[in-house]
Length: 252
Image 1 (cartoon, one colour):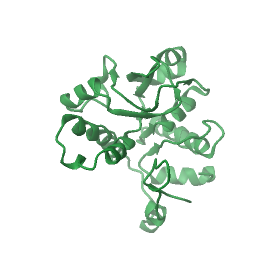
Image 2 (cartoon, one colour):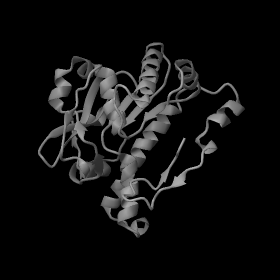
Image 3 (cartoon, helix red, strand yellow):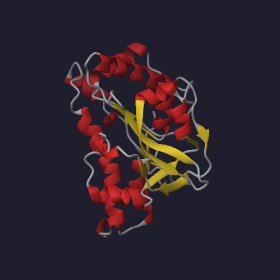
C-alpha cells in the first residue's frame, strides 16, 4: 500500500487480476481502501474497453467492494458471525453463476446443508440494504445468504452481473487452517464433511486462477516481474502467538 497512482497503474497493467484479502481496516480512509479504489476504477475502465482483469474480494475485501460500488457504508453490525461456520442459503439462480456453476452437485448439497463456510466479521450486508441501494442492486447479483446465531440474514456471496467481480464474505482460506488446528488426522479422513470443507476454498482459488489466466496483462521484463514477486520477502512463523490466527505473516 501507499504507492503512487502511477505505480499502481503500472502494477495493474502488469498483473492478471487482484484479490482484496481479509483484515480489519477503515473502508474509506486506509491505505488498503485507497489502493483498492485505484484497482477497482482501473478494472471497471478495462471491462468497458473489452480488457479482462478479474477482481475478487474475501471477508474485508467483500466489505471494501460494497463501499467502492455504493460510495457509502451499507453494512450493519452483526454479533453472531465471530468465528462461526454456516451453511449457504443459495439464491434461485446460483447454478448459472460463474462462482457455483461448475461445482459438483454433491459439494453444493453439502454447502447447503452443512456449516462449511467460516465467518470472522463484525459487519454484514443485509438483503434489505442490498435491495435498497440502487448501485449495488444494479451491479451485483446475490448468490447466497447466511443466517447468523442472532437470526440476522446477511449476504455471503455475490458477483458482478457484467464485470468479472466476485465477492464472498466467508474466509475460504481459513477453512483449511481451521481444519489443520482441529484435527491432526484430517489428511486420512474420508468423510464428506472434510472433503467438502477442502473443496470449498479450492473452488474459490481455482476460479480466481482460471479467470486470471484469461488476462493478457504482463510485466515489461522478466527482471521486473521477479522484483515484484512475494518470494523477495521472508515470512515469519507466528503460530506460537496467542491466539494463533495466522501460522505465518509477512512484515514489510
